[in-house]
Length: 441
Image (cartoon, rainbow, N blue to C red):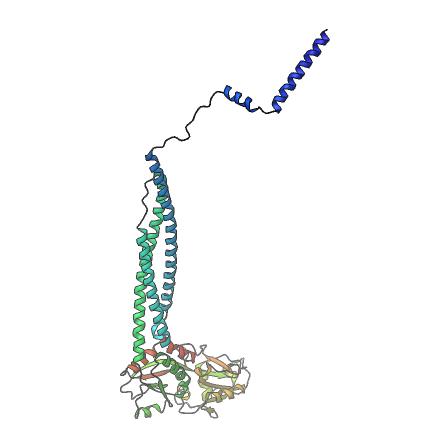
């Protein structure tokens, strides 16, 4: 009996569980859903929007407008900063150009270079004016700063104000640079225009009388003068320095150069513009590097006849002496080292041309001679000779004992004569002198 009751309970529970499983697996029918909804308590109604005061909405709209205004102004500032930076770069470029122009000496500029310089300066001044106008426009635009009242945007606004102030300061600094550059540019331009106009007025030829030893120098000066004064030219007449006084009795050239001081120079001013020197020439393998002035005088008067008397290390060979013909400038200046009452050694070989003396010395180990050092400046066969020092001094030294002056006698009556005197003092003329081997005063 108990067993049957247990079986019955088991069957009841089984069917009960099976029914619950079906309810879970099968959705409710529409009618059943409706009944379930009706049995549920109705939901509480919630308002979808809460009414916002008009004042708050107005504040929000204003803040959004101000925020947009700040963003646009930030973009505007970045653009103006870029424009200002470009102008600053351009002004610096003009400054560099002006510094380059400042370094050029106006008197040393050729006419063509002057013309180019004037155009460059005029162009830079116009460019500066354009930069100035742009800076003024930017500065005016920077005055219009947006008005910001929203507390939340005050930090951003302060940053914008700070950037604006810095940009205006930069523009003010550039304005000062502009003023300085414009004044300097006008100053240089005025000077260059004046020189250019003065150069064009020089139209007459300038007559020069000088010795043949200056021919190479005169040719270079002719070229330079033509580039400085396109409407004028140098007319050069060559004559031995000894003959120049006789020519001056008949002619009165504007400028006279001479290796000798002239006594009759009425109407002329005089100055020394350079020096030359008598270089002592030896055979290239001669062991003598320096000779005293006394030994040199002894050699040329015949007191010392062997190279070992001059230099103990030298080869014991007789000295062969070369010199210049009388009435030549080298002879005139070299003869001054001879003791009073002494004459040149007998048998001295004399010539009238540098190349002849150099040729003879280059093939004779006993030889010694002298020539103007300026001739050696562009001499191609320097390896065939040796240049000895005198008492340790080279021909370039101001203490060298065989230096002699180049005299200049000049008039200052015409514009051409005045301009030539300016030319003689210019770096162009002095550079040409040095390039031809002539020595500074």
